[in-house]
Amino acid sequence: MKIEHQEYATGSVSAVDYLVVNEYSGGIVGPSQRMLGPLKNGGTLKTGTPPGCWGPMITPAFQGGHEVTLPVAIEGAEVGDAVALKIKQMKVTSIATSSGVMQFVEGRYKGDPFVAKYCEACGTEQPASYVEGIGDDAIHCKNCGAEVSAFRFSHGYVIVLDEENKVSLTVNQEIANKLAGNANELAALPEHAAQHSILSLARADMPGVAAHMRPFLGNIGTTPSRDLPDSHNCHDFGQYLIDAPHKFGMTEEELIAAKTDGHMDTNSIRPGCILICPVKVPGAGVYMGDMHAQQGNGEIAGHATDVSGETELQVEVIKGLSIDGPILLQAWDDLPPMARPFSKEQREKVKALGERWGQTEIEESGPITFMGTGKNLNDATENALNRAAKTTGLSYDEVMNRCTITGSIEISRLPGMVRATFLCPMPILAKLGIADLVREHYQL
Image (cartoon, rainbow, N blue to C red; front, side, top):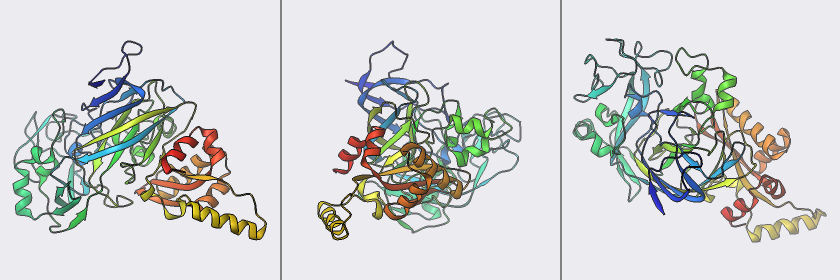
């Protein structure tokens, strides 16, 4: 049965096996959000999402840097479990977008321009706003009419997208100005999206650059145990909440306890992967958004190409798998070369090598990736390795050795999101309850 917008209330409605969601959270993820569903364990979730960072950033009413879906309850998911999200399909629906390196406009925010914007002219906090004209001064306060955006481009570009052929091209200023006149339609903003389109700023510093398209989701996961700005559901962005002078201010300990690290900007979270997420509220509260048309490792510019898009995934509850942050089973093509499972022929060669030296015991293993986040890349790497050690029961030193010779450390985002991948012994994966998932995913 296919259902749209079913609202969740514990025990009051039957779980469905297919749910379509195209309502959004306004920049906040947490227990205060209205939860949809429940979706059956094994059910399919389809979403249509608006662009992530830049649109919400230039829309002062937002108290987070993204516009993600309302959360969905998963039948049987309890605190202390995990939920596997098997991404099946993903499609970019925007025809064009804009992005670049950001700079803040001082005097228009309190502590954090992603979270606590205000109009410096009239003092209204999170003011309603409207678009008039194009360029840096296109966003205006509805209360007083003053230009109100808390963000500018220090260097930016407008890019047109060819979803069918997976190519894209940045355009010149004249074309960017024309696109800005039809911004919402070209961005394909969904009906319920509340953001302004970043195309309205029409910044075109880098025309004529061709780029491959390889879409993925930058913010996907489960609901944190307390309300957080959606872009701050991680440690690197989340650090700006620590002792912040606004209502989302908290201690570092409170942030670590609450977050589920949904904001990863990891370019391998795309069709063919399985993302395993912690459950910190009853029902899990699966949400997603912040689709990017493309991004290399690291999101070096701080922002990539935010687009509207559609995603379809299947959910599976993993009972009793208590984890602190996401585990990723990457698509085969995205695995670091050293972490790819051995072929039948390679296993035979390894067996022969062992026999030559008298080493008859050869472990069976499968790839696993632990996400880590921190204030910087060193802290994020340590976090990923600690999570791997705690979850698997291997020592920290052994995890380091395994990542070195059977895996890799990869940057997902500056300043502090990484992937730690290695081949993990199959008995450990079995103990975690994910051995069958790994075997099936990699056809072991």
